[in-house]
Image (cartoon, rainbow, N blue to C red; front, side, top):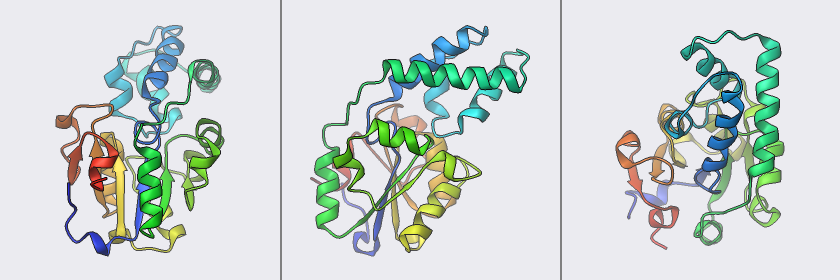
Length: 216
């Protein structure tokens, strides 16, 4: 796959879950087991479609959808249990081509960033140090006020990298992330690691794996 005017881009901004690390199934099972204790039911699609959204907002939306009452104490309990179960189940599985792609981009002189809906401490616990060290900037959910689908996280990454939004390529796997990237006026490539192509059509390009993007 070729990107037109490829030489104009200076930075590649990666979502983490579902792009760098194959973690979405662990997110689903931890959400599913947590929420069922409160009589809230979710499907994999419920989790995958809104991936990138801040967890607090996600919980409120599910409770309100199922007409289940909640308060600040319940929300705190849900988030605590969800994190506990995620840590219990999670195993590091990087997508096979990720390290090769990162090495290729570094050799080409690209600036690299992780832009994720997870908190910063989770990024460091989920990813091997040799992978984290390849990124110039990490923008996590606890570093910004508004998460995806708002553009704040991607615009913050561009600002810290000292590049223009139009000089950035974003790699995403979910509609909220795509919307955030496009609202930020960035070129967006989506990978079908979590959702099929029809849910990712608002991206500029859709492909099956990260290495397809850079013809490696």
